[in-house]
Length: 459
Image 1 (tube, rainbow, N blue to C red):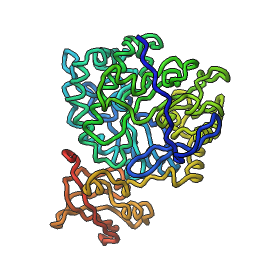
Image 2: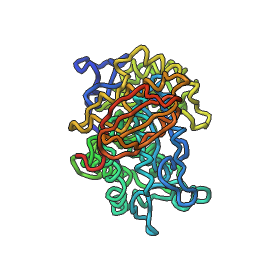
Image 3: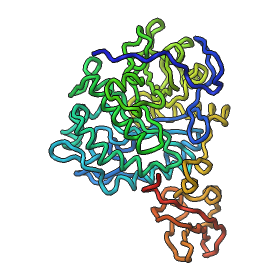
Image 4: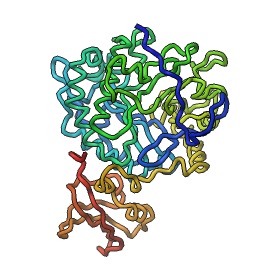
């Protein structure tokens, strides 16, 4: 069956009344928490593939707060406002499965690790776009990474197993994290087309209808249980455009998703497309960086984010890609990557251009987690250290020794060395806390108060 294409729409742009032409476009943005943002991002995409949160049944817990503290500090220093972080990947560590392939839940460390990552990011005023799955879920890594590492085509093909993931892992996760000021959007799956019969090349393959239904069911569940946006990381404009030819399909438009799973909330909020140099061709290329290849050319009816592009120079330099994404009307760019170490480019290859772009467009890029408003007043507070404390610690003299946290009754709750204040964020209950910085002579040299709101159950 050929999935239906979407009707031609209007791309949402900062200057909404501007007419589109096939050439330079007004800068596009994505609306989040009362502000328009241009995504000046980076793919992390992991420290330990598929195991950055939770507990692997053989390897144990591999979460590293020190890695993420360094990473997000670097992002803040170089003007990155959003990162793309992979979560389950192939399923090796999360979620948890029974012997029949049904999802039973998340392990005890998963959500607390996730909390810490978001809180460290918030301290550095960086948004996070978690990517739940990847086409790796239909690869076979079982010989090297354990019995759950891939070979999960049945999770896509069997709607009952999809529902077990939604009910036992997804809904608890998105509900728990719904109040996070910097959780920008949920990405359902990275490059699902490589798991689809036809373009796919993984050990297992599923039909296009099965994959689209899987994504539609997850999109609906996220929309029904949180206020966050939803997207899919399409491998190429070849499969994310109604302009056919040169594109071949648009799996991710509203009509395609609803043809597979006819529910009102089974839609995406913005598109995400990827680019690598194999897609370059002046005539038929699936290329967002050519002057004529704008979202209007591709007939995209929602904002389009370039979620992956090489950081290493190839057909284009990093500066050309950063500048072209903005000039052509895309909603942002997220180079690959901080530390994937796969020859496509690294942090040093892109950080200078990302910083230069931020410095040229601070009003479109800068994100302040403390200023974000999500729902009721309780969500204006957070579990992170207050900004005055962070600023003080960042400029502290060698005399400063530790940070102490007291409850309103004056009881000492936590004490951290000054160097750990940003990364060792406390997991404390809801309430009012006083943070103090103490020098080596045990003198209080700074204090600040913060309110910490509970996460679970806030609607």
